[in-house]
Length: 280
Length: 295
Image (cartoon, rainbow over all chains, first blue to last red; front, side):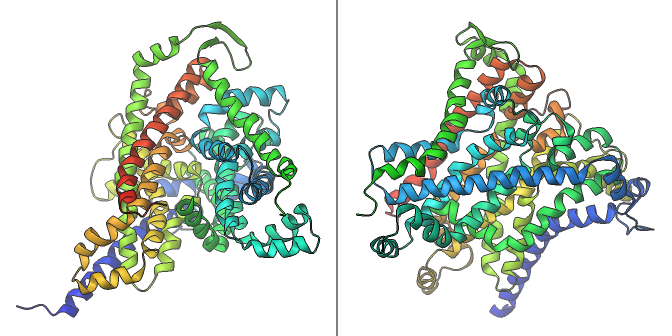
């Protein structure tokens, strides 16, 4: 009657592994399914989406490139998200440095202003922002998307970077100061290089959020030649939503760059997330 | 001595604060003012002061009621399932020895994919003719289902959202578990706390702070739902029944061009966000403070 402890533990272990594998299956399978089906003609997807393609081909991809200016969309995304990322990194690290090193009146107010703005969803500011974008003649311009995105990503970046810079040893800075280095020299030649791990995580997150932010893209950009990847994808779906092959290929094309970034930066991404959310 | 000259603060704080004040705080205040005026068209100026008229209309607006209700359902589902699945997965991964890194990578992966892409992927699953779900049903000799019908559509929007973000909370909670000092578990083991007991009396109470953070993020996250809902069910299809507060605000503002009304919806979103996250904070933070584990 007695079940040996070892067998029980082994049974528990295998149940746990089964649960974990099921969830892992749900996250991997949809994308494998998508890639396999993107190599089939639409007719075949409609009838048998679970089999390997009868004659795998890249027609859907060729079709996607012919119908849409996907390369232009990649370039637009790269410009918008790249510039947003650089501006956020620069501005936020300056603020984080200032707030962790200087004591001044109103410091608490500034910090609570920054934390408080985390509560503003894009909906609550977009109408007046759009009006300003119109007045500054930035509709259909990259910069019209960049500025609102910089504004809405700054507080997250400042909070993560403050948590990191607070722990940097101040003695190094002091000895550099005694050797005659000014505040700006210390910032650019010591603080920034030392903060590289935190800067890397912030950079990845800001880039991803900006790349994936359909809302701002939809509102500011009305001209298809200015569309970044997500806005283009949204448009493809409303025009050719019934062409399953084209849809599958287009989604793969949007996901691939992100997938590559994720595979290479995966450790940074996860570490950055946890340090930000747990410390902040 | 080196950080005494406060004039440096101008170039350190200036750029970011200017951007935030001009593109975040000023628009936020303007949005509140807009909601009190009659504004016709995106570029139009404020014309007639109408006071709280918009808020009175909102209280009686059936579509607003639907969007608030749907957002509420979304909140409950994200807290229960996203955070719940995240917690379950974290406890499981913590219990195994091999493959931790693999599971972390794979579980987190959907979060980096844009909601637009995930929405389109699920559209391929949901399609009536030849969608993946109906192909499975046909193979099982069952009649195909209209996955985006009145009764199912809302669920079909919530499903991909829960699925794609569970990994996010998994990573947060898993890190929380890893941060618990191992001597606590060792002395618990001596006291005979294993399995469910260990989770109930040791792990879970120590994770309260992290779970509180997760709940707050899940709740405020559900208020921001837009992209995915818009791709799967544009304009709250069918017949506005799947509107969330964000999509309803977008439709009123940018399709119907009822600017002041949209502005008032946006303010309600902020107010609900502040109130609900305060409640979540109270629920999860209080006890932690009493234990002296305050952050």
